[in-house]
Length: 384
Image 1 (cartoon, rainbow, N blue to C red):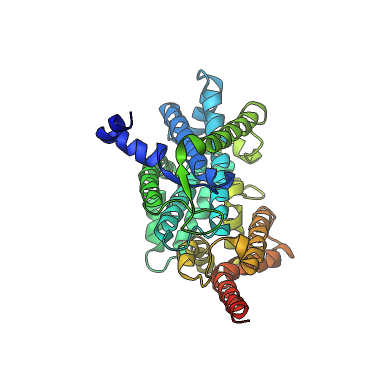
Image 2 (cartoon, rainbow, N blue to C red):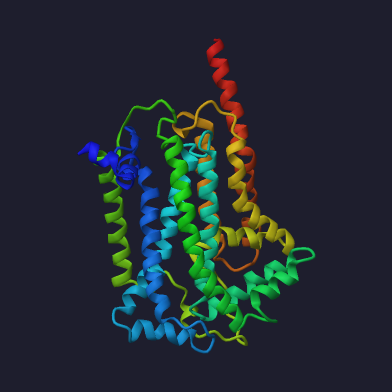
């Protein structure tokens, strides 16, 4: 049987990258977030294709077409709510995947290329999710698109041209909706292509492990580790089903179930929860261009951190100073999410600005500083 698998090119790839793929024996359930994210991407792709069949990208019919899908298309309500709630679960899994990578030092060499490819995928996922949030053409969809696209006007020299291209005119209108629908449909396929690159880079250097060592004992992925991934997928499916069948509209904003009205501005424009930490960073900077730079830096800083570490080891389990900084940063990130949904007022503005400072300081200076201190302590212990 083994020879038969090795003589067939496709089966040989499956055998070497899935079945007999060498996997560190110390992996725990935190390493199942990657494969679960792939399942979420598949769910979003399939449900999105079926929704695109019935969706009408026109400002006069977009909102009604969503209602038509929910009310009149057979099982349309199921596909719509799977796609809408699936986006939130996708981000839960992706954020967990990123947090695990930060905790266990998965961004460090020789896996820095793997980490950078993952950051690029994350940025594309954020862009795709924003484009999709505009498509229902509700109040929050319309005004969210207006606010966010207007940020591009702060870019020197070419900002106004970028906004005009995004809008396709002089305001968020039918041309904007068509552009956003086209991009929202195409970007997931680009994400799929990058996921294959991500997997290729993963299999080039192998998976990390909780011990943070490259000399871990390996065993085959099948039949030992696929069970962990399967359990994570079943938990995800169960949680998603609860929301789809019992609380399908809980995560969405109530104002987005009102058709878009360019004349009436909502009292408080709040994006989806997975945008809130970055939205809080954007609002914390009083200058428009500064806010654009800050939100871009909040994402791009993840590309830089693989080159700022000074520690001997990767895993936070053996890095006491880094571990404290990590949990402070994670708590602060969640706090930014809370701050992003609060109206812009005193003292919440100051709270958001302090949280933004902590976010950047711990990523830009906390990682190299903790590595330097731990390295110094380690040398001191060895010389005693």
